[in-house]
Image (cartoon, rainbow, N blue to C red; front, side, top):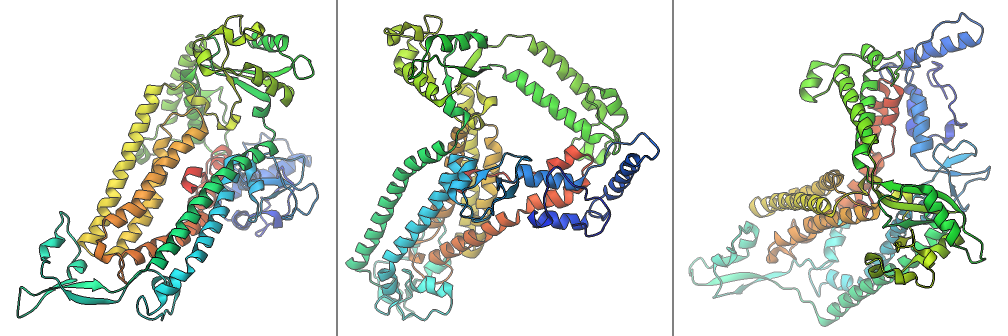
Length: 627
């Protein structure tokens, strides 16, 4: 599909038809020949012509480096960043059991996952992802059933026995009339009432003070506006039944979740099913051969056959070296992005890279503190020398991962080596008195467990200290509480000071969108050994903020007398808040504005292929935020 016919749509590594592509890619294909959309269009077209001419026996010339190819980046986005499943020539409909394709799969025919994928399909991205979508469905059912239980109460609230007759004309009116909103009021004498009763240390809105009045001719004759709606024991019992049902259902979902987690885990054969993790290896046990011989010589499976070790991974305390290597790689990418278009970058020739680099604009240096190629080159040279020195050091062993040939072997070794933690901490060799061959080096009781999935281990945090972890979490909690304070102050100002509950609703929704990414940013500085621990910490902070921001602040800033009133009060504010969350948030997620800007605006203007590919990534998500 070449809308403009510029010849820049050469086949990629993947065989695919235009109708198998995303709409975004089809739009890009139609616009990629226009220089206003793709500044590299002309250069890529000339390059393709020169390659064709050379293949046809034309004059051999030194061809420049290939300009960035937008279609190549789109192909990478759809086949690497986005999830695909293997079709094997099948229809790939929703009844087929889908097998997730590896990123960049070329050996089999693949398709993008459809919108109606089941939680079993989505569990291929991790057990937690599959459980999330299953819980989402279960909680939707629970809320629906709880709504059905509450129908008798809703009918009563809409009747003239409770309030004015039901006369709703739209959905919002239906929500009001079937709720406990009470419009029936009457003035009653209240000799002991005083206007000062509203001054409780905070400024109460004028709307609440309007419920207090005095007689014109007698200032001592005071009146109070009273809600005239009644709730009986029957309505209370129905509400209690709904609450008990929700509590029991949530407990049942949690109980079932454990069995489903095992089911999803067993459906996926991963490295952790064949591996064990040793938490207390000797600091000098670097030799993988020693570990291999220890297990193969001393352990047998259920068939009395010696176990076979396939792989040994020794994790050492070399964080400083790893961080330096990462920093050097980032600097190389920076200098590569400065190389002039059409010239090749060679990481082994930094002098040539500097000579081929474009100058950095002064305003970029001033505003963004951008560095020129010469400065980056000097930093690379300094870090390279530091890396060489760090490579000469010997680092202590922190953990050892042993992978066996068969899952049965892993289970047998895990079973015989599992002992009480107290015996591991005290190195009580009597734990293996009947099988002394299980002692490593004849004197060490190994602490073992089944490891997490390799992708869930935060390898760069394996050596983090407890003190550093606690301090980092204290800082992120402090930031969370500051965000809560800002939101509370803003909502209080809108509702109490200016009588603007609608503006308060927008502020709460906006804060619910802004603060979680802010928390996610600062969470990057927290050290966690596993992704599970990271997600749990992230979830608690977001849950704390959204719970306080959505429920506590709104309740605390709404006077009791405004709780059941009709109009811009508590019930309508909650209704608008839920409506905004159910409509605005999904639409924004579906539009993926940030990703769209990267792929259609920033990506086509990248200087080289690496930089262009950087913009074609899937949107990141956090299960903690979704929950």
